[in-house]
Image (cartoon, rainbow, N blue to C red; front, side, top):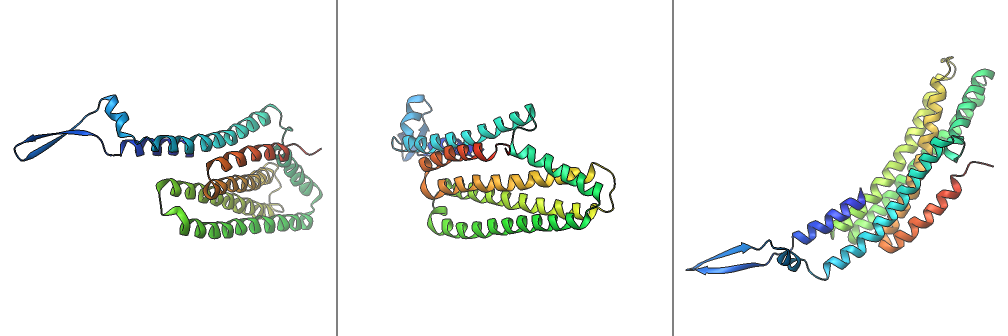
Length: 245
């Protein structure tokens, strides 16, 4: 999506530049006719602008493509083998834990475990929001008010971090609900599904936080550092997404 916005921004910048036209005097009136031939359209685009926009667009698009491609392959890998990634193994373990608690009626143990997990999720959510507040203030006072491109960078940082905080809060909410359902919901499936969803939300919270760090590099350091960071992030994801040995 961001790559498409960058490309659209590049195109709109080109076509909003002043167009060459011919003026013909007819008495005191000047008529300006827009020349829409390919030669004139090419002349209307400043020579120094096109290379700059291409230099900005290519590394950002390549970095986003690398991140999207990795997670697409991760999804396909999980569909082929449900035990091939950390995320799938973690979700399966949460379901098995839920079944164990229900069979042994270990309600106190379950509540203590859920309380610790909820505390961790809420801490991560508040930390992300605090970090976003500091970063937003810094970016806004430096270059966000300058150009639409800088505003796009700021939006990318804000949206990824807000999504991270949202997923952490969703995970805490689901775990809280599971704590109430354990003693009163004897049927299999409902609590198990809630625990699976809370596991996925926690994973997404961390993943969006990592991606938000890459977006922060883009906003603070530029396009090529963002590309390098995205490639390093893919290698990092490849390591942490391996199933536990």
